[in-house]
Length: 588
Image (cartoon, rainbow, N blue to C red):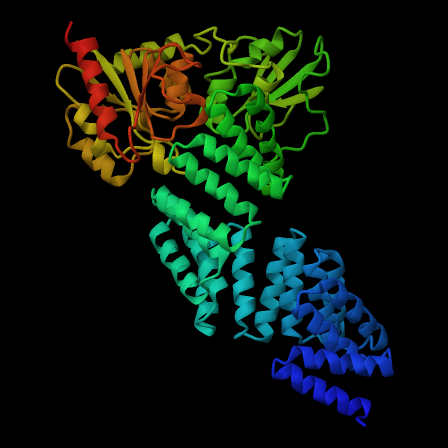
């Protein structure tokens, strides 16, 4: 008959050969004879963890560390199982006990970093990974995890270097290739990201996360049909993969299949009821379809999404969504997204003032001067400047929900933004006498906008509009080196964008234009808010506010919409727009 130590030796040998069932049988036999036998509790805890039974594992490993509190490896293993059970604070305590017992335990420092990441303590996690690497520089997992922490901190180039080092140490590391693709995507190197995901999938053909991320890269490369297939492959491998359903909805949106996109987002939410991004995307889809009632309600999920990403605002004062009376109260309305959103939704300040409120409006610095005289506003404040006392606050983008805005009740007192007479006079003098119709041009939005790859146009693509019967004025800000050289070579385009100090200057120039031709960016909203003729070039799958299949805008009566008939086709709407310009201004 085997002694307990002999049984344990055989159990350990079976485990090392991969014979987990035999190892488990032998450990259990030891525990039947001696219930607090440390080695059996420890090994059986590891086995149950490996075989997907974390609740059993945590019970066994907890008994193990009670039996032998001085074993650092057991504390480390207990921490790993607690992380699996989403108990990161307890896991962190286990790792710290392991390190107190064994200060040179590199793997425990690595695992401690993982628990700190779970707790959103990213800087501390980074330091823990760095300690692991100081102890063991060739620990591939620590390089990989430090890359993840650096990505959390938006230090994508450094993260990429860590993923590359992890792969150098362990060439067959699909997770590192996958996250390397994420870092490359964050660096806007989408073709390289796709290659990295492809390599991950060669190494691990059943890698659902790899297929989902591959789909993201394909979307970034404007290949949504292929992206859709990649998401569907991810879902075939992992049918309960909420993120893949959300991503699949995005691809269906790209393909202008919004009803199917709605269903995909709803499936994501059914799997994860608190999935803020899926709720947000569902709301955008409903707004695009003109379902404002449900759309505005779902739009509030952006606030939870912002909290998750660390971009939300915290105020001591309560959020106002229409429940409290505002008579003789002071409310802060604050911008939260892009410049165009502020220009579009600041119209609601008048509606709030009509409720008897004293209205403070906080906006981006480049808009402060322009909006200083906005009707209904007592004081305009620049974002991040000190705030005066107020009773309530409300993000601008929540006001359509407050006022129950539908397609027929959009506040339409236009113009609600006006130019400054002195600035108009100054720009009139700079431009000189007008001898032809004046057309303003804007072809790019902010490069940081998540959909900029679809909404912006290359200058070379918009130049076919230029003809000699009009005066063409470029209001484009921040032109790159190539565009600057191209504009300098064109005597038929007058570039003034670099001379614009803020949007008050832009408004003054718009006042002197016969028509504004722009992509979907802040100038489109400014021109519409001023009641100027604005012709907007829209991508195949437009932003929600432009709705579908219509040439006019419910937000701006003076706007005309020129839409891509297919993904990437700017030639068709530009040709149509030029024909309209000819008929409107040249034929007469």
